[in-house]
Length: 427
Image 1: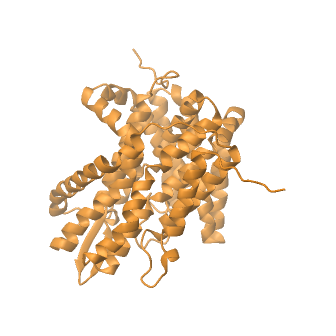
Image 2 (image 1 turned 90 degrees about the vertical axis):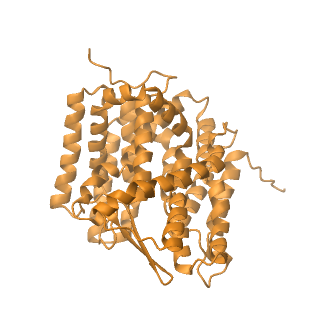
Image 3 (image 1 turned 60 degrees about the vertical axis):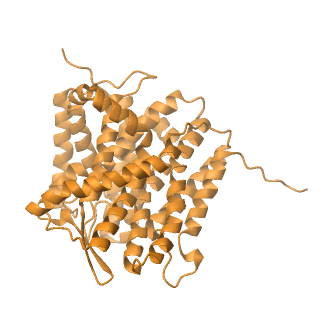
């Protein structure tokens, strides 16, 4: 009997989305832990990327999982919004759920650079560590904006259907033309167009034809998506790697290019073709237990996996003089499991200490819509500032040239989503 590919009924968890999210976060963590090529000499930390190894760019067509994160996020946001008592309650709950796990990260990294210096760490590695800790906050900044406009995008979806992601993809292509031909920084506009388009595909999984594709149809979708991606790489201005590479003149990821939309279609088709097998896998007790544990800790896993890497790299590279073997060599493959295992142990400790901030149940607040909109803008701006500048203050800069102003924006946003703010008006 053919297994149904429809999403779970209202009120039930969709195990396909749970599996996709779990695979995505494991891929993000694994890629980030195994990419660095590190060595240390006379106070200077040299960094490289293992994925620059010839031919390894092909791995990024599946290991670059941000398209699936936004796809699954779109589906999950629609499902949770349908169950919410009101749009405002849903939005305030979602914003708090995303922002509260960042608080312990702020507390640690506002203190960590000075502590590392006091322990004798040279300035250059400290600057790199602070930059790495803040770099990945770009995702949360963009995702907050995506969550905030979900009610509007859902209304557009129900009125225009596939026209919405198609128009957004067309706009992304126009932005790419402007980026490559006129003004490079224009490309950052695609952080909105590209990820909103992918997020919109998640709606079509919950309320659309993606949910009813046969395995053959899903495989055809995968071939079409990856085929368009291949053509864009072969004949367009897009690099083959779906992540940014050191020294490369163009990155598909920072800022995102329209080719990530075709990659998202390919990846969605690939995973949908495997949906029956994934559903069977999710029924195994051990896998089900992992899914139950990881689901409520998705953001904590994302936020703390790079600090875990910083700890391991600091001890191994700076403390013991370890240098990454040549990527692809027998030594590299032999050491990689031990390297990832050490980082996993540190991450487990960090989650034990800080994961509780995400797993505490939260409820919505009666916050005005304008206040929620302002909170979203402030939080997104603060997180983007931290992603761009990191958690370290320049050697000769004052306190306001470091992370404090950006952290203040995020904290202000959290206050705004927690309770109504009344402004007294004097007559």
